[in-house]
Image 1 (tube, rainbow, N blue to C red):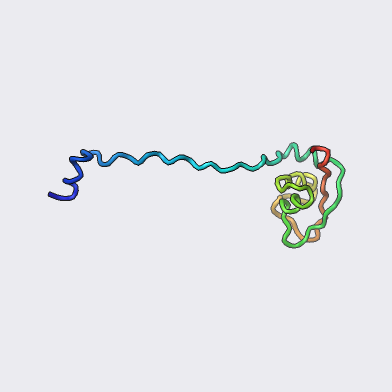
Image 2 (image 1 turned 120 degrees about the vertical axis):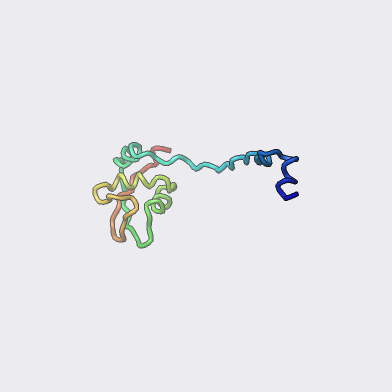
Length: 104
């Protein structure tokens, strides 16, 4: 009698039953990101300027200047004439930072 013969009486020809389903993990969701159309509207608001430093990202600038890293698109939209990609900013660039305080 082999090992498989020992298992057959217990499980039959189909093998052992499948394991119970694993519940899906829940992940806390962040605040929704600002959409491009909303960012474009805000970008037309009064602005101040910020000079990009080495190591800066638009999300880091948004966190520091606007209080929310998710508002990086507001800065991107306000600077469309000099920025073609939100991931490509360079030290020395002078960016417009829109005033978003009227939205709160």
